[in-house]
Image (cartoon, rainbow, N blue to C red):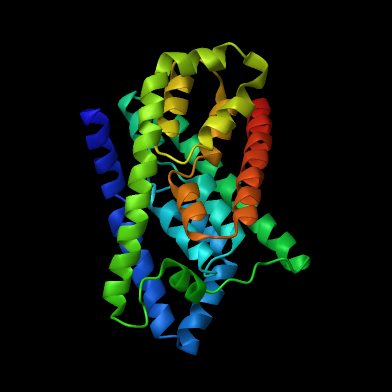
Length: 280
């Protein structure tokens, strides 16, 4: 129990800098809403999936958490959100390095995650633009729902308040998930995959959808142990955006939209897994 508690503290503390910088930016935009600054954000948003797919490759789940908050505040597009989630590498890189996986293999996985995130994000934004379905969000709305007193104090104080509330939420949920995963055990999860050879892509994607850093560890270890192949690995890693999905459900009060995004990620992750499993 103590070990799980310490691991959860360590994992969630790594998110604090990303969360704080994100909310500091949002508070700045809220209080210093200059037309030039808003214009820059919107211009970057059009190319968001390109930057998002590249940003997600950095082995940290903090970026996915940050981008989820920015999406909830209407600063980035759905395509950018999905691009970051899909390309997020999290714990996969250090695990593969520790197993002395050839650099070429690791590079191939990262390239495919980047391309999958980029293509998926651009297509999603294109479709939403064509059909005029881009959601109307305002970061002021996010500020109000958190009741942080943004208009009563400094942006620094408001950003710290946002960060603390989100971190507490993440810590509690992550601790519970760690307890469950520890109770089930790696061997049980491995057996779950091995017993259903024809559905491993779907099962891997379902495991990857768990909003925690642990699933990427399990998926990578299963692949390296030969429990399943490349397709299931990619399906699971693509949909596993670290704690990003958890942050999305916490900050975006549009529950139906959140569920729709999760289902969309799951379906697209399965399709990418099946495609890559057949060609690689």
